Picture (cartoon, rainbow, N blue to C red):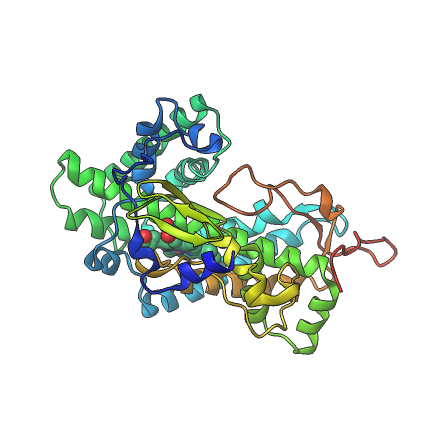
Length: 381
Ligand code: HEM
């Protein structure tokens, strides 16, 4: 683990892996692990085709620049994000005090979904369709038939989106991309679809899980929550600790070794082998984070993690994701200071994905009556 982490940290580490198959003794076309195969009704070629939509070859600086969310653009989203959070909190407050509410689907997920749709330019009527199609792309436990139908729907929903924006261009990312890729030929459309899938998928489910996982950590670690109240830790501490311990992206398919990569301990990734990146492991490396690496402790000074990736593919929305989490969590815990988990934490079900890390739902009581016993914290120290 230590050696592996050092490699991901090394500045040249990622020059040894590529996103396209590399011919080698251990062919990249060797059978993939079972969950990845499930994405592939027609075999590995289909996996590559599907992933290609999400993972285009290493982005040229110019492409990163175009998709980039420069600081002023992100700051411009702050008032809108605050308004979205306020609206959702107001809606939550309409529930009766002890009525459980699903914090993930009613709050955490709704915020980045609305922000990214505003940013990209998804019109209201198309939002449910587009968001459910992009979320389905991360459901790696899908059956082959579901995966195939999901892929078709993903492409069709993006085509509907493009058609809509072509008819009524606006001040949004889709209109920018369409202006840039001008012609309506197949390749230009493929590029725009690819960029849209990347940004909408990357920008919606990840902040949702960051918000939900940070809230969950605080709901199950009452001592840490108290430190926030007393100002001994900041919201930024809590968010970074969640990114370290429960990053929204656990694994990222799929890269290929350009050359043999010795990992130490007699383990070598042979040239050409397919690699599933395990971003989450770096945050739990005991040689960096010590014996408490698996514990949520927002006071720790060393919170190094790879939750936003590394190097050429470093997340373009990291600042936005952090800002959304900050606004959402401050608002939530301020509005509902007695917020409690409504079920024992061990009853929460993980999402059915080996890419995304989070829970399917997080039932909470917003204003539990003091007489009622809240679900006990399990991992607090
Ligand atoms: C807490 C929130 C977020 C987390 C944890 C996260 C995580 C990541 C990770 C791990 C990668 C690297 C993927 C790889 O190496 O293949 C990535 C890339 C990316 N992210 Fe994020 N992300 C977040 C929020 C966002 C947001 C809000 C947006 C858009 C508005 C966004 C847009 C992107 C894009 C476009 C890339 C691809 C970069 C490239 O390949 O050049 N992300 N993100």
